[in-house]
Image (cartoon, rainbow, N blue to C red):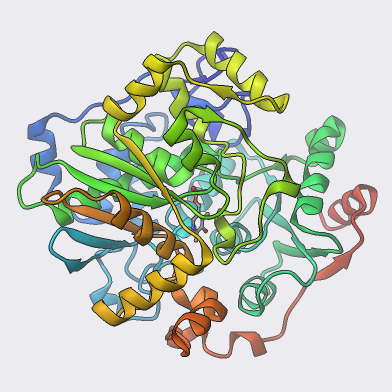
Length: 475
Ligand SMILES: *Cc1c(COP(=O)(O)O)cnc(C)c1O
């Protein structure tokens, strides 16, 4: 399996070479030369596997430069009931991503039972183990520099804590994260984890990361790396749970079903697209957005017009407050028939701020051949969804999953099963749950009082020179 760039300017490379790189040299994203395919017989065989066995079957099709038995060990040590038990008895958690039936033809797939209570743990935990393995083989180290508004930073830190050859420097906006999110990150005492609270908003943090990455000498000398959502191995890890969710829902293998996915950077749902390309019988993939509805507009009109930060609202589903969906580039590459020159032109127009509009034929193909639909929700819709799910089914859902619930009801077809992807637990967004229900959601036992643990962080002005000095001093 070799990887190429969506923009055509990269020599085909093996998995381990693209694992540690960010963007392809031409600014594009790494993507397999072709997708592996499972036949109907294969699917039948896969349908009875447990999560780890299934993960190996799927992931080994994309990674053939790690010996199979070593890859199997890495997967087995990642997807354990202990890591994904979320405070429950591990003996009851071996499903990893259990399915909850709400009513006939309507399901939720739990993806948030990992250490930080959001779906990002599903991929980030594997990434941590892959990084450690490849760095040790090559006798290399990496210093991950990232910016977070909450979920990504904590998932990365819990995946990389205590790992050999890896340091994490994570910037977050000073005073902007929820007390719970801050406690999750800042209470980590591992020596390789460095939390930096920057006196700016999230965008200011991201600008600092960009400034450091533009300094080619600094980047090379101090081996600066990234774990953001364009990382291909995160997508691969996510493909697995579409298979697991499918097999856990259908009555007979082969039956087409729909998935609805709360989306921001288009990483999660991109994995659904790939699962479908591999032969999984997914009928519709529904992109759910909040008030930041660039993706809803794209799927409804064919026009993709990313917005500036100033035009991006701060909402009650903050992990989806994104107006430029990086991973969309991977899907559109397939949509335009893998024409890299065409794709490169489209993304030149995106980067210059112009955006693009699909021609009629391509727009039709998107709905008919690729089965994409979309929906959006407002704050009031999310509150309604949280109330309805609590009243009807006795469950607490978080604000992002509520976006998914709303879009799923807007787009479901009678007689076709619909699976809503749960992207975080309600406990992470207590304030809005309180607003909707007048009560707080349950918090897993082991996280009670996390806000009272001792915290470690360094507060800094938004200054790239000071940041580089801080990094260098700690290596
Ligand atoms: C990151 C995140 C999303 C968006 O996922 P994408 O892969 O960026 O589309 C949705 N919900 C939650 C809770 C998240 O943390």
